[in-house]
Image 1 (tube, one colour):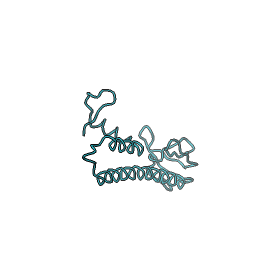
Image 2 (cartoon, helix red, strand yellow; image 1 turned 90 degrees about the vertical axis):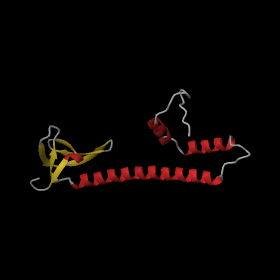
Image 3 (cartoon, one colour; image 1 turned 180 degrees about the vertical axis):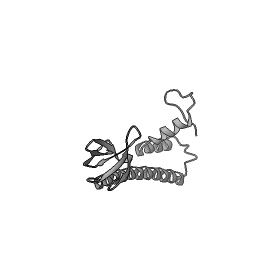
Image 4 (cartoon, helix red, strand yellow; image 1 turned 60 degrees about the horizontal axis):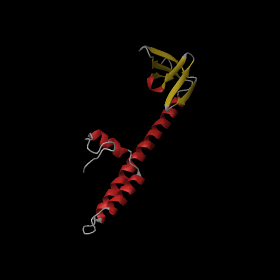
Length: 137
């Protein structure tokens, strides 16, 4: 398979560029390529239909894996929110920005751009920085 750069057809394309380009193709792009392939095929040597079915199956598999990744990210975020809510009213220990260990009681929680933070009396703590929970944490 030959990869042609959109800006310069004679310029070599690195494998990472080729991977990034293929990662952004959608179902409409696939169908456009399929139609172009059918349009320019040799009428004396038509492409095997099983090859098209195989390509479509591969595309569906990639699309399914991508969708599953998005679902898993959503589930992970929901789990983080659930853990943060469970910490309200509990004393926690956390690793501060300066590397020391701080403690405090969680008063509330919030999410901002996917990050779950806990509000303490003396400031906010990111959930991933919690190192201990419980009485005398």
